[in-house]
Length: 226
Image (cartoon, rainbow, N blue to C red):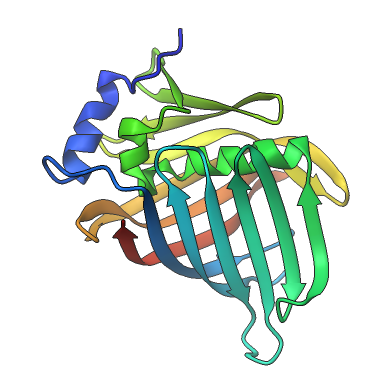
């Protein structure tokens, strides 16, 4: 049975990453750098990004700049706001390359928010739009409603009580078709950033029929709360 409050299993994690008697902020903002690979066999594209997360609701915006040439930049904006998700990519921020929206995108983006909760521990403690379920193996399932269905991920903790991996199902675009695909992510190198102990790096993979495909690797370069 799901509960509105996070289970005791996460109490140790929150005690380790949040300062004592910390006020709950409205949002968390971080900067990243890393690389992404669109499809297996393609070369990785380096990016720098700014991401802002809501704390009291499920919402975020990830704004990234790709490419080594400053004169030809691909700008990608990935967001979930007020129950609606969207993904848009534009050259120079002007010329459309791709855009995605609709119920499957809503659920994909809400799932991304859930998967990145280790970077928003304040939301674990206080976001009323999240529901929680303790699993028998000691991991924790967190869910929210999106696109007319539940979006869910499973958070697993390491021996020190910190969230180390995440897994679940997420719609993946293959051409113009959204395919429900298992994914997994790992977090590591917890460091203090902006008064919060958060993962310094992460990577995310699709679990494809032909094997695991790691499509995102990144590290956090700054984190602020407000």
